[in-house]
Length: 127
Image 1: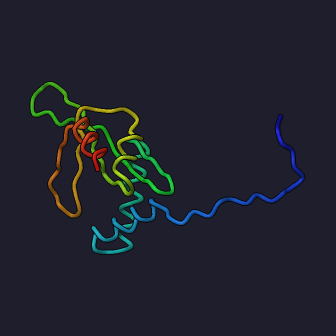
Image 2: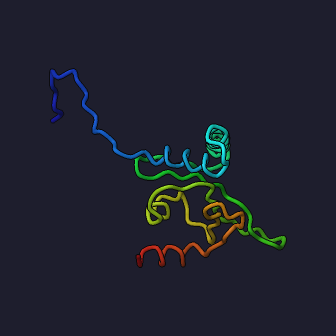
């Protein structure tokens, strides 16, 4: 049986943290210019909405694309995580599909790190 009430007020829960705002702030830090960093964030966000995958939750934000990490003619798909704020286990649990590899850059380091996804899942769960 559905509950019907005469109450016309909706009282949402107050969210204390917004992971997407953390991501925007980090973009500003990376670009060294606060407002340009936010503009770059919005441009990347729109690109990932159109050509990749984006997840927004109060405590987790990620945007990633499928890339080819093969150095040969045989394609080797992998996730490239452009930005993630939140728990690594949640990121791994919310991927749309598990690909063999996952790649990302870490904290201002321009090098792309490529990991075996299954191994990273196992290591993340140990923590």
